[in-house]
Image 1 (tube, helix red, strand yellow):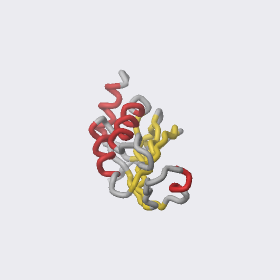
Image 2: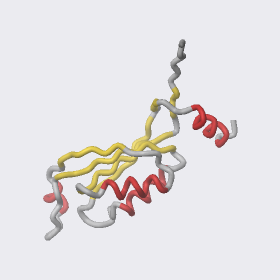
Image 3: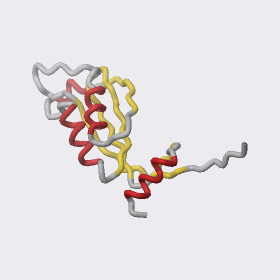
Length: 124
């Protein structure tokens, strides 16, 4: 069977990166997915120099981290970012750090029925 290969390019998207203490990532991903994120990539990392920079007496900051990457549409980014911030309790000293990076483009396999829904929502 001759199968035509097609690359679907996603634009108007951003990457939310969230660096948190080990063991916190699952709650943050769950909160992000509840407001529309499609999924996340989680990996482990080590932080360095965090304790010294915080300058907060009595706050033990674990050097082992979980890093979450979540790609979202630009119109979702503020809501997902806020929910992740709250779920990760990032308003607490030493809990973590997060940021948004605009992406020029991304590509992956997207099922036809999802493409049709996206087209309908865009009014095409």
